Amino acid sequence: MKLSIFIKRLKHPRVRKRLKIALSVYAAVIILGISFKTIYNIGYFNAKALDNEKRAKRNPTPFVQRVMTRELAQRIVSSALKEDPLNPQTLVERISSNNRKLSSLVIKNNGLKKVAWIIDMRLFFMGDILDEGGYSLTKAVERKHNITPSY
Figure (cartoon, rainbow, N blue to C red):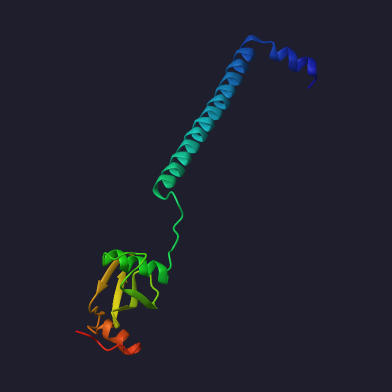
């Protein structure tokens, strides 16, 4: 088929009309696809930014696990017993178990040693703590460190 015959057929009004319709439909599909893709990307990035913003509000600083030290325990004990933190009467001698939830302490006041507990790094407690089996953890710590109970 020669090029001149092909051009001659394209100049026919029906072929031109059909060609214009086909090209306009093709262009409309391309424009519609590009607009859908653009709208999807804008929505996706806005949702991602909103999610990141919510995460930042929920957890502003990374979680740092604090370790019970003798100074921290002394400060907790002094504040719980309402003593002067610079010159406390009750001294922390030993931290037996260094756990975030439950730490056992050996404290000394007027020459008497006692077992005390710090719960969740803030609550000071003197007395018996029992485990799941009903055994006294306080008595176990007293035996471990040779402390005679002064009831």
